[in-house]
Image (cartoon, rainbow, N blue to C red):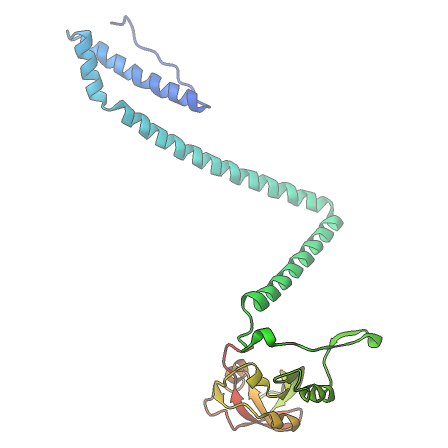
Length: 270
C-alpha cells in the first residue's frame, strides 16, 4: 500500500518510442492503482491483479486503437506541415519576383512560349497519330505543297493549273483533289459578316470518304465554275442558317456571287 497520493508527471511525447512508453506507463499506473485498491479490501496480490486486468480488458486491443489514432494524427500533422511549406514557398517566390520584375517577366514569357510550343506539338501529334483523319487508305494519302525559295515562301499552295497537271498523272495518283483556305463577305443573312471558306477542286469529299449530313456534295466538274454550289459546315448550318432542315437549295451571296447550298457536312468533319 502507499502512504500518500500517487503523483504523475505529464510530458509531450515527440517520438514514436516516447509515445508507446507513455502509453505503457499510463496503463500500468491505472492497473497498479486498481490492484492496490483491491488489496486494501483484503484480496491477495494475485486475485487483485486478475480482477484489475479483467476490468481494463484486452491490453493489445487498447494498444492497437492507440496506434490507429497515432497514425491518423501524424497524417494530419504531415498534411498541415506540407500545406504550411507550400504557403511559405509561394510567399517567398512572390517576394523574390517582386524584387526582380524584369527577370520575372523574362521567365514568365519563356515559360509561356515553352508551354505554348509544347501544347501545339502535342495537339499535332494527338490529331495526326492518336486520332488520325478517318480517311480510306490513309497510308497512301500524300499532301503536296510548294516551296518558293526566291520569295521565301515555304508550304505554299499550288496553282489550279499545277493541280490539273498532277491530276493527269494517273501513273502516280489514284485520285486527286485540292483545297485553298480563304474568307468571304456573307450578305443577305441579316447583318453582313466575314466567314471562313475552303475552295476545293476535284472530288474533294469523295477522296476523304465523307458523306453529307443533308443534301449532296457537288460533282468534280462543278468545282470549275466560280459561282456554282457550296457545301455548308455543320456549325454554319446551325449558327447562320438556324439549323433549317430545308436549307438545301437555298442561295447564299458570297462576295457578290450567288451560290446554291448543295448539302451540309456532318458535325464531326472539321
